[in-house]
Length: 105
Image (cartoon, rainbow, N blue to C red):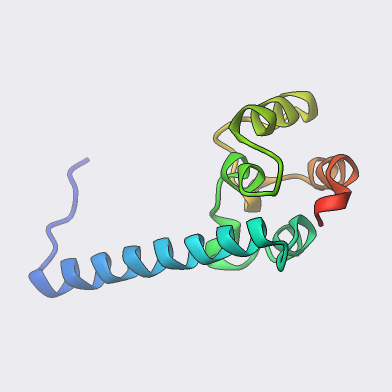
């Protein structure tokens, strides 16, 4: 299947949307690190376009005192694939994350 051919205007709009999403993701990450936004907030807003499409590993690594290695270990213990996005988490996986990291949310 070939990629659709986009007009110059469509390309510009797509690039603007991608930049906006990166900016919003950066803002969410900074708020997570600063403590003004918690894990529970993100999990409860999984229908949000930016929060829902964020990878769980990226989300966990954004929490205070949790890096990439710890995030990977937690995901492995709970049974969450490293490519899973927030909107794709099951109820049990969400509950397990909140139980494990409740102090962050």
